[in-house]
Amino acid sequence: MNNQLSDRIVNMSMSATLAMAAKARELRGQGKDIIGLSLGEPDFNIPDFIKDAAIQAINDNYSSYPPVDGYGDLKEAIINKFKRDNGLTYQPSQIVVSTGAKQSLSNVAMVMINPGDEVILPAPYWVSYSDIVKLAGGVPVEVPTSIENDFKMTPEQLEAAITPKTKMLWYSSPCNPSGSVYSKSELEALAAVLKKHDNIYVVSDEIYEHINFVGDHVSIAGIEGMYDRSITVNGVSKAFAMTGWRIGFIGAPEWIARACNKMQGQVTSGANAIGQRATIAALEAPKSKIQYMIDEFHKRRDMVLELLGAIEGFKLNVPEGAFYIFPDVTSFFGKELRGKTINNASDFSMYLLEEANVATVTGEAFGNPNCIRISYAASEDELKEAVKRIKEVLN
Image (cartoon, rainbow, N blue to C red):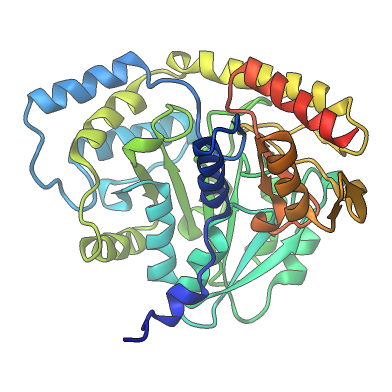
């Protein structure tokens, strides 16, 4: 029989970060010593106090289906977290716990976007935004930014991108892949544009909130006039090194949260019970419990910037959060390196994998064809060796 796959899956892109990680695993299986700087995954172990909470949950027999939108006491912990860290006040009916922040984003897309609705994506953006929007029938509208402006969208760019079909704006701060952090004044300027246009909603992806090297995090939902049109997405994967536990959540207007609960009830139902219990412990803990990881990321950022800065051709800015560096590599385009012509960022990223045995991700996957993403969520020794290899194959 002929394959009869749906158009939606045929037209969907593979996740570039996962594809590069798979390629790196394949090469390791062939005996190559690959240093992986492609995945956005902390290299730390989960803090012991979170492990203890999970073990206690197992012993307490949390093995039945949880509520679709999350345990009540976890929702209270999320409410307290939003109040403590973001100055946002939510009710339990405004919180939905999901299987990772990726499902949170997918839920919002499916309940908010109709075919033909436009969603503004400041580029670079997280690799899955565009395909999640397309899957819901929406039209991604990319707004290019540059390294000279620290990859941040200006109010003028936002205004120019808005059309009668604009339904939403999606962005992350701190940003994956650029590490950029929007300040309060910058968010206020963007909000001033949005408030001139009725019925435009904002998804603020704040999964890297705590990995911030420049001061207090600002949520756009806290800007005057933005609370009722903002969906704040967060989770425990990055700051608490809990990527495999798959717990994300939203704070949103009640009518949006109820719709997400309805959607989730037909797709996955409630998120992992043990992960939810562990998340309570994570969110109730003071930030000091994870400060050692944040400090280490900050130290690594400075080290990698210094090392990359010694390589001619890399154009760098200073990312203010997350654990990525997003260098502009256009100076290598059109050049031949070891018999291989570098036409774009994808060629450059693949060259580093094949010649330096270092896995990065092309910026094309994030909506910026001039850059590559380098994750410094790796040990100092691995990072030093990786940059050494890169320098050798570029010299």
